[in-house]
Amino acid sequence: MDQSYIRNFCIIAHIDHGKSTLADRLLEMTGTIDRRQMQEQFLDQMELERERGITIKAKAVRMNYCSSDGEEYQLNLIDTPGHVDFTYEVSRSLSACEGAILVVDAAQGVQAQTLANVYIALEHDLVIIPVVNKIDLPNAEPERVAEEMEHTLGFAHEEIIFASAKEGWGVGEVMEVVVGRVPPPRGEPHRPLRALIFDSNYDPYKGVIAYIRVFDGEVSKGKQLKLVSSGRSLEALEIGVFRPNLTPIGKLGTGEVGYVATGVKNITECQVGDTITLEEAGAVEPLAGYRPAKPMVFAGLYPLESNDYLLLRDALDKLRLNDASLSYEPETSSALGFGFRCGFLGSLHMEIVQERLEREYRIGVLGTSPSVAYHVVTADGRELIVKNPTDMPAESEIREIMEPWIDVSIITPQGYIGSVMELVRGRRGEYKRMDYIQGMAGEERVVLQYELPLREAIIDFYDELKSRTQGYASMDYAVSRYRQAHLVKLDILVNNQPVDALSLIVPAEDARRQGRGLVERLRGLIPRQLFDVPIQAAVGNRVIARETIRALRKDVLAKCYGGDVTRKRKLLEKQAEGKKRMKRVGSVEIPPEAFLAVLRKG
Image (cartoon, rainbow, N blue to C red; front, side):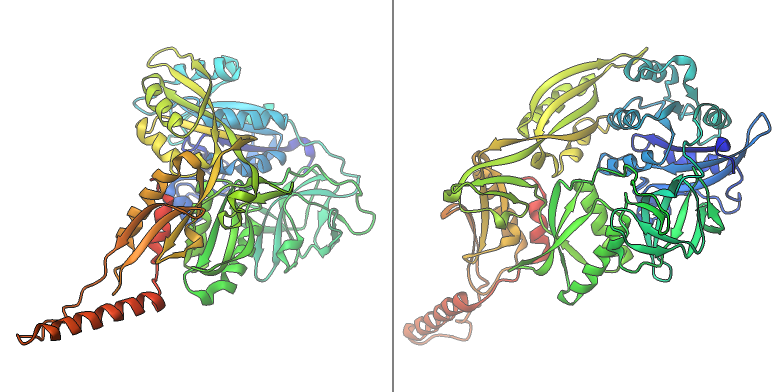
């Protein structure tokens, strides 16, 4: 198709503002999906996405649309996630587009992730089409929200579209504005092929399937291709587009979005962000690609069954292809055996990966407490990056520890300012500024800017924020810098043996409180043995908290109905000797629930 009739755009919004519902209406309006096959959140095909009502993976689809002027256009839509943990998915999608539909809920207004997504779209120099969605809700205030968008984001009132994706109101106007305002893709059809891999998947028969946007030239079936960065040769076994299922076609031209089945079986050889070109007379200069995602949260993943270790490794390999922000490396724990230290973008990302491993690959996994990457300078001047608490040097060998801090933006109704400030202050947050969002009616909202240690935000911070504000607050964050901190390694000893999977890195002033809370929870989770089991929290060689699980008591005197007391004493002494011997050689099996105890704030 002629480039001037191609439009590449995506939908961006805060979580649960109606992106997927709007995508459903666009699919219906263009006839891409038959009404009999239509279901809510059609593009969210993952079971986990449908259960949680959120988009986890970006989805692409091609639609044909006949505009009011009688011209037929090819529309390539990419639906994006809305949660802060999946911002990387949004940035990848925007790199393949020229325009973005910004959806804002008419009842909730501008939220933290709304602002973040707008800034990302502006960085990519995209045309932004503002849409106030859900105007059919009883508590909708479309005019107030439109005024918020004018004051906060700088849109003109006449360019804002009022719509209800659920009812289909305003969807036709959205389509006309996309055709009219989003520019056609730039690129030279006669130049050597350059196509950007913006996502990928693995098929056991077709190998790696690369999702591509063609910027220059064209790609057709059977051509010999090459990856610019790695030099790896591959063949275009199949070329196709998303309707939204994979539909083979002959070729993809300049500006088009589709896929190429490469036949590559080694999934590490076809990376997201690489450039595909022709093997003969191909392009030399790669496309800009993406900044590699930086995992900020690290946790150990171990198979519940030790025999599943190789299956877990293969599953992580395949997930890594579909999720470029996931990283992992092998590690060993004395308590849990062989596993992997994995890097995630956030706590929700970690939770999603664990659930996908269990559902899609049928592998039971146990996750350790999440940690962050600390920069440690040792006494002899060496600089270490510590992702695992067990790798932390002894306190006497450390000169300084630097921990990551984040810039946090929290948008909340004015009435909850005190609760939010109390929460952030209790997590070592530092106040920066507060701005009011103007509106026509109703309660004003504020944007609170804080600096906060990342480790304080990865465990139940978001849940507690929602709880304290009755669900009205939203947040967005970005890593700002590393700052010096007084941190210590908190070890947990069970039966005088350190359990490495329960170790934590905590602020020195908070170590005693967290240690006491943890040993108290573990006392209720570890089953009783035939001998006393001490549970201790220690910093270095200093024990700061202790609880004891009392031994199960067997009444050895039950068979004595009288007689000399020396007989009873002999039985009790024999029992005591047996308990001592058992305590020396016995081992305590720690249930999975105990490892989950460290995921809760003490």
